[in-house]
Length: 118
Image 1 (tube, rainbow, N blue to C red):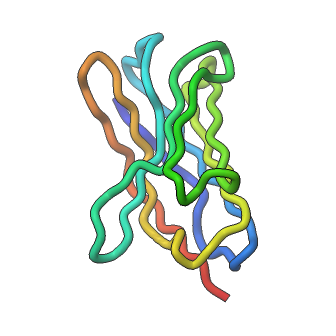
Image 2: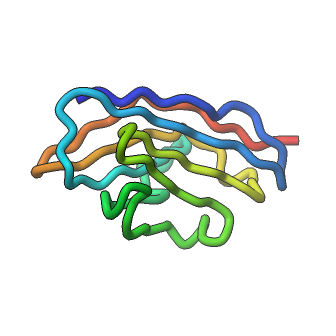
């Protein structure tokens, strides 16, 4: 399984950025895709996750700090997951990692830097 992330970069406070991730390889029909982030000196934390559900995804879960600002979505036909990040804050600055969990295995994409600064 390989995960290829794209997006990120520099965003302004109050602005928006969008992350995308494409999974390839042996992707099973039931899985959880999501995004984690790690800021300097801090532990990696789950930002948002989404189950397989229907064609556009099922249940979602968000860390409290991004609720109402970030939206996770997925396209099961394309094995892609997206993170729309609105109302960005400086504390959203971190390296963001795409993740998929299936059949007891965890897979990670390469990190993509998100920096929120004016």
